Image (tube, rainbow, N blue to C red; front, side, top):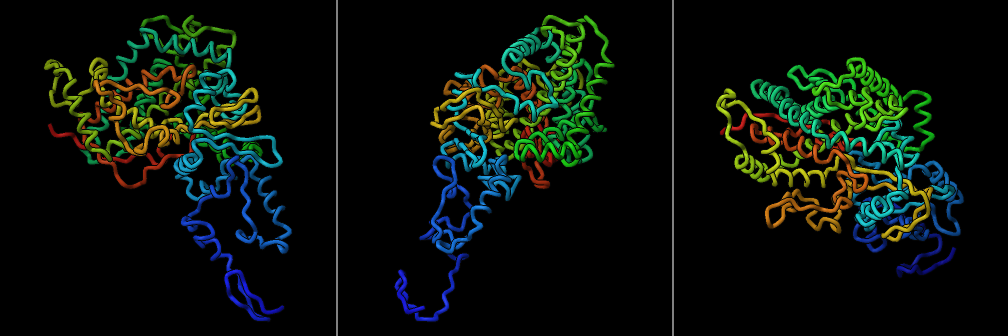
Length: 555
């Protein structure tokens, strides 16, 4: 309307045409900082976890006052309403760009927020707390264990596991925990494991690897290990070896059903409840796979029961037989039939999926660290007992017994390091029973869903040091050459007391047995394609498997 002088010092004349470049404004370093061209949602999150407003003359996507877009608040609120049950994606949209990087991007965000984020929503009483802070974990799951159960939200999403140990809380959990420990610490269980673990290696794993060597075949090592753990799981669950680990590699519908269930349960945590319930009602998407998989799981369980005849024979020490005989080890009760199904399914999931996931990531890591493989082989040579000449061909690949495995310090350390970086279960959820304040200063209540991010915890410099992203088994070995024990609320791969995984010790035995047999006898070459990335599931299994070529190691 008239000549004027702008704050930048430029003079403009009447009728000059002024172009305001909003695109360029978002890329000006002195406005947004040196990282202005990076996608960083964190700049929009305030210290208290709420939304951080920037002035309209700086963020002009909706113009600036007094001519600011009148529909701005509607746009923002409508998105908040649509995303109010999507706290992770609603406020941290960066993870949407590359879903295969979900775990790493969430870890990066937690590192910038000192390990904990409390997200409150507008127009909703619900909130979510994401934490990778060991102090918070210890406070919630150990010091104040009874205040932080898994709760109804957990059971609603993990309903395929029913009312077993995996889903239980309070008194029910105490009773089932006692039963699980009674089974896993029994002398007959250890005898069964000592017999089964090397037997499956010698009759299943080694023949398949020998076949792959002779035919120069690429094989999915994750699949082979999963078959191994599945066969072991069915032995301890029902006394029956499914023999899925054979040269023919038969299909395992039950295993596929568990994989589908795991992905659907993860999906249930990141989309609005109304959406996954609608999918369930319409029988579409992941909920359809979940429902179909549930039917396969039930059929598998029923087949196990139909094959089993109650027996008190010494050779019949397995969970199913103990239930059918109402053995006192499992604390028999009136609802045994329902609990029996749920605990057997949970046992197979824990023994098959979590163990195979852990050992698969271990092999991926050591394949990138040849020095670690050399140290493991050297340790195996030092601890391997002389072969019995009466057992046949001295050149035949060998397995290791439990006495030999117990002395493998470096291998144990390497497995711990792998689990630190790639915990089999990357997230745990809890629901507070009352208002509380965590050591990090964040407040929670009954409407807060707490998510413990164990994957992120292993990548926190404040927890593991500046080299936290490096694979360093040495961090687990003391100066005396023994295993260094870290607090379970810091090394959360097996949960923490009192809810620590009752199968932790046997899991290490199985992992050591598999790793020792493969590394001692074979050279493993990991193939570049397909890429090795984690799946979006309740377990951290590899989405495309672990494709390798196997060769017999030269003496």
